[in-house]
View 1 (cartoon, rainbow over the protein chains, first blue to last red):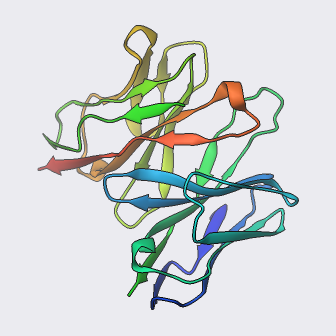
View 2: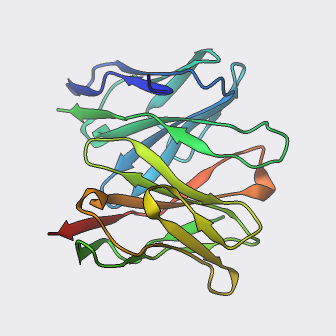
Length: 116
Length: 116
């Protein structure tokens, strides 16, 4: 079974609709991240969470919100979807906390979102 | 702030040929460095990482990368490419001086096409 799972894998929605993308992990990591990928732009950080009570905005958080329901679950919401939010969305976890300061991020399979 | 540049948007090689994908970074000290691969329709898989020590790093699938401080580079290499290596490759930089943040900065990606 995959360590980081995302649902749904594909989603089509209409402008103005609220949608939620979900991420679950079985790696036992405290840190979780949401990124979006656009062609030619690489991945950009939307939100990140260092634990259930610690949630922070990334570089492109406008139009998004998140919820950390448990250590293993981190959801991304688009309150009112717009076409330029059409993208591939990735959830990631990291193994920070081993004591050596080094950190590696592990990614889910992605959710492809189309906003019409 | 750190930044990452992958100068080649698209590279085409023949199967069996050698490969080098370029990555240049901007950072005030020695960063953490990563290469990820994204196969069509798949998530990001970690190929290799560099934190410190030996500047030549071995990864999965026969890939290696060399950290060159003087050139601010972390180029990815493979001596003989297989058709299954066709994918998009991302270089990423982490910030060891800001471990409370844990941000990864990604390059724009390099698409690798492999001809038979």
